[in-house]
Length: 237
Image (cartoon, rainbow, N blue to C red; front, side):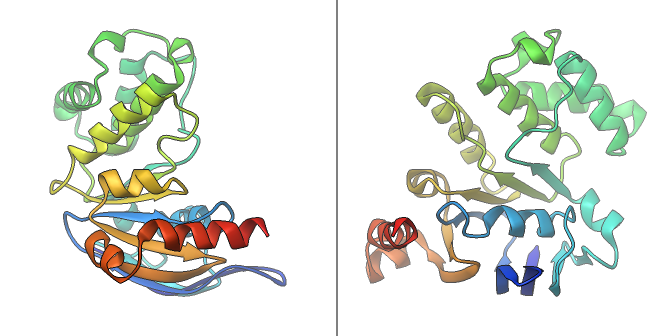
C-alpha cells in the first residue's frame, strides 16, 4: 500500500532524513515513533507529496508520489500537526468545501459529510463556526477532512499533541476504530500512543530508522520503553 525506498532529504549540508526504506501493508496501523527533531514530520510531508525529496521513491497504492502526484494524493488523507482548517466556516460548510476539492461527486457529498460527522463525533457541532470549537473538536474536524474522500491511506502527524487527557483518549479511540478499514501511519513522539493504537512500530532517530517490527517482537527483543528512553536520553545529552 505504501512503499518507501532510499528516501533522503537534505537542506544544504544538513541531512534531515537519510536512506529510509519501509513498507506499510493494507489495513495496518503503523506507529512512526521518534524524539522531536528525529525526522518524522519531514518524512510524512514527503510521503504525502507536500515536500520534494533529495533522493528516493515513494509509492502509494501503486502510484509514484513524484511521477503521478495527482493519482497518489487522491488515495491519501492527511492530518498535519496543525489541521488545515478555516476558522470562519461552519463544520458542515468546511467539510462540503473539502469534499468538493477532493473530487467527491456532488450526488455523494451529503452522504460523505454525514459519514465523517458520525464517525468523528461531530453531530452536535455541524453548524458551529470552527473557530469557536475546542482544540479537541478542531482535531476531530481535521480528522474528518482527511477521511471524507475515503482514502486508501491516512497519514496522521502528532494527532493528539496539545490535547487534554480526555480529548487524547477520544482521538485515540477514533483512530483505533479505523483498524482494518484503512492503512494508517501515525507519527508521534509519545510512546503510549504507539503502544495503545498501533500494530507495528517504526522507530526513527536522527533521520534514520533504527527499528521496524511488531510491538510484540520489539518487546520480546528489548523493552520498547528502554529503546525509546535510550533515544530520548541521548537526544537530551
